[in-house]
Image 1 (spheres, rainbow, N blue to C red):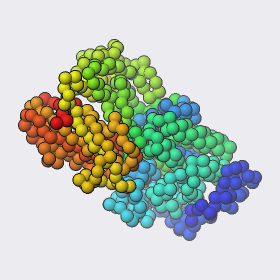
Image 2: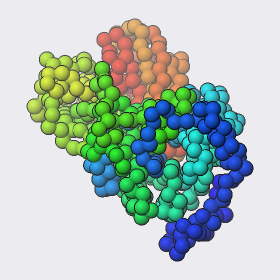
Image 3: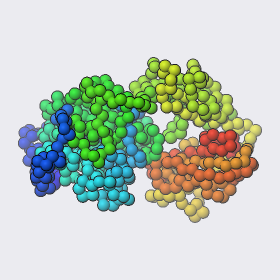
Image 4: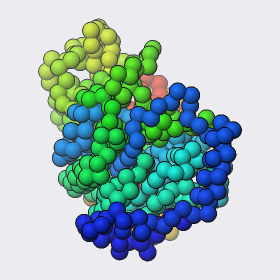
Length: 589
């Protein structure tokens, strides 16, 4: 059976440098279980029949592969925190800051994808409460015990003699695969304990494959917020732990035959994740070690389920057909990259429009009785980009080579949607960036705004409550359907109701959109239009209604259970492109 917490005292002693480490660790680890013996016999028979061999001509690129997965570590965290180890691995390895996880951007769905070589629609893990045998739909194929075939089973089936390990800080990680296929499977008490266990295991056993999971960065994101000083400090600590792992590989004498892959499951926005923003979906991906091309920024799509396929390819094992992931072969020295008909959209970063805003909101912002000054910056993954020029529009259209050239700050005097793109050699080279500028003319319009009331909810809040049964604890007036500027009595288990009137200039069919973390609803003239209720990350929902010219009562209900908190309300209709509901059209009565 896999090692248990009962084995910890000796493991910790080993991690602290006790003598005769290799012998003691061998005694500490539990020997192969009966199922491993069965696997050995099955694998031996399979070798005879040719069912479990490496692909014809497959040659191992490395004898050892270590994956270090850092929960919640965003590309922003890697680039802005004190991360000398990861930057050195990028300099002497292959990398991209634009790899992508899977949707939903929950931890379990993405960790399952990173060990199973496929997405949730195949392995069936869609949320953190998932357990084998208790799911909404079964895995498309099953390796053993109802589990999708993980990298641990794939390697055990083909090489039962190999030493494989899984050492993880988040206990839920161990629920995502059949642990019988792992020689050393153990849960660390915290990031330091996890690091000690991993480094001791590497030095003592020199495993062919190890997956190490760290969870403290995600904790910092939920507690203090992505982009906070505490978050960056947690990423910096992850970098130091990665340095310990790299040193352990050297101490074990296997650095010349080991590849280390560093990645994450998701990023985050504010204090949450689970939504559909690029900041949540995009993750770092770094390959370093034996045979890896140096200072090689990858200009190709990389998905999180490509990670196990790359590890199996490096080890010379066979990638199962059930996996959708493919090895990222251009990381190898001398390996020709695939022919790409289409350019990766994020290889050239989109221009940064400033002022930036916090959380999930696009750049721009609300400016009351004053113009805004807009600036733009051309940045790449590491810093200022000397390549290309920025062109932009002020009418919501997609920029082209004839659009305005950005040369300096621009005064924004009316509400507008700005789009900007990077152009290289006269051709669009980035996806467009976007900013919503709202210029509210408040002087002489005493009625402009909306009323709000704040309510406290019982823990755990999972859905919008019946507000008729609750008493508000605070109230006031604001200008938009947004909680960012409100002084709420607490962050968790809280709800807000906004009420006012919407002035419609032109009659016709309108679409309203609510994006929120957690749930929200929108009603006009007492009729439900948008229902985005429930506990979730930032998700968007929409609904339509036909409106006549004039004033219409509008109500938005919102709640936050825990974690991140955000709300945005948008509308589009005749002559109105999709944008934040215009604060100039809102009245308190």
